[in-house]
Length: 364
Ligand code: PEP
Ligand code: MG
Image (cartoon, rainbow, N blue to C red; front, side, top):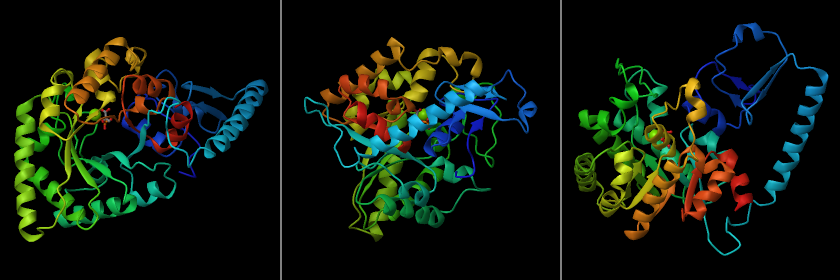
């Protein structure tokens, strides 16, 4: 990441996975610059403003001066934020908020400059699968997961089981669909290939031996039957692993709430699991019928749309009613303004890109 000053992509939008990765690495990115020819910028001086989603090619001196000023301001702010490092994220009326990180890059890289003291709210395992040419074996997975868990221990890590399909295709599991976001993705793939899920869960359980800091969560559930099936597979895997390792800690199990049907059924889900995690990226996409990757409709992709906020409130209330913790782990959790709204709604834990933690702590 030291060699890349910025990213400009003709495709995608603010909550695309490339944008999420760029944010995790603290690299400014402008997505969906579909109306300019990127080749034409070759050898040109370019400003990429990731906050505004703007690019300037061969900017005039006055623009350059203004951006130099902004860069200085930004580094001063960063210094000020560093002063908050050892302070808790607590509102003036004493509401404490856990600020966790989203991770999924290689552990060693992420942990070295991690700002969290509350652990990992979302570990996306699919990238470990995507960067390879075939499915990793159980022991290979165990080794990868152990590294991650160990890097953050004793803080807890919410590991999400494999969530491929849709905008996260797996090169060695090709599927051609007209409507991939509504197609074979997330838990649907895993339940159709139980071997993939069981292997992963066994590897996770074994990886957590001696560390006991792991929670597991399932992505993209749209009905309770899927949860029953996933839980049955999980119980089997746990039973088998416990035969050999009886002292293994039983992880907490949670679900992602990121499909409108799951949002409406949040209380029923909350009854059956240990925690809920709101995936606002997909929840926004599905509630508003706006493709999270399509720059043409990016203006309509609004996580602050009252429908999205009401949906989130519904889930938060369901969690309160069932005394189950609710976390928000979509990109909105790392947006300081949105984070305030979430905290006001009673969300007690937010999980975000490491680079956003200090800013969110500052507003709280
Ligand atoms: C989400 O949908 O908000 C989420 C956290 O998962 P992902 O972005 O990986 O789909
Ligand atoms: Mg999602």
